[in-house]
Length: 352
Length: 115
Image (tube, rainbow over all chains, first blue to last red; front, side, top):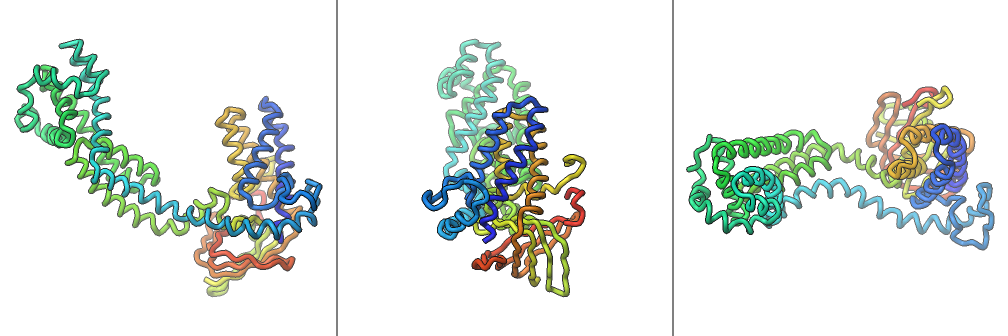
């Protein structure tokens, strides 16, 4: 089995790289101990991949082979059938889950939506926290002008704490929250207040408090507009992300992140539900778009673990007659079934 | 990536030994033991070392058969996705079977040029 050769060849490569890198380390003023560390770390990582028996590995059965030097091919040869076979089968399971890895990732947003829709409390809590951060600051600024105590409470305390004094002070605001259209504001504000009202429906105390704060500032209109502008801008940006960037153009992970962020930004069940619906559509789109290339890509992804089924080599000749292919390859590394092989020459015949 | 005037393919960085090296270098970089430039230099040393080691130190032959699922030839690189592959080694060991294997292959005739 050419698997035996791997250990020796890799040992040679590591020595070669370490030796030729010594000068570079010196030129960069890096201590040689780091070079040694590199070698050890490298060997250790390679051993963890368990693609072959390496000379530096402790022997599985110490008695028969005693020499841990590369040119001991006959000795580990005996070990190989014994060790390689059992470990090659357990190697397979790690590969399979990785194939599933991508679909799993794609389902994450779905799961998140599920959470979002079913238990809106999670999203509401997050949203409230986020809003607390935003408005806490703004409110501090504006409220400080009116009442120092209030500002301190707002920045430092949960919203429920400040609710009672607020109710006392701005009681006339409460009806306005419920019928938010009454607020003297441009049209855009309706959306905002709808959102906020929805939010209040979800977790009333918190969201009321937010509206109240704005009411408390006194110059309701101006601050309201500023806030609204900010909120609208955020929402539009979030939408835009969800629609284009967050959906199709971004890597899956980032897209998922945006979605998560969007979900946490949603200001209530109404908006949250909208987001949820959009997400589901997006997801479908993403799924269908990515499903096809994934077939190929799964192979790329798999070798993140170093255990993908992949052959890296040079080609001398690639010939095709109708659907029959013949190729001559050389100087290759083949990773298959969790084991690695090296070859000098390989010929392949396959039909398309 | 030039190493002593000659450059080598970087494709072997995807092998297990290349990945192990990359991982280790990443660790060293994130610990700020080495800088990324040095890591790149080491990787190019690796490109050279593995290419030469495979040319000089390996004698094994291999043949394989299967059904070709996908083929691609781009920038002088052949990529094959082969299903139901059987690999036969030249030294009489039992053949190795795999559901699928991906072959990434650079042109052997222009070793002076990177992929």
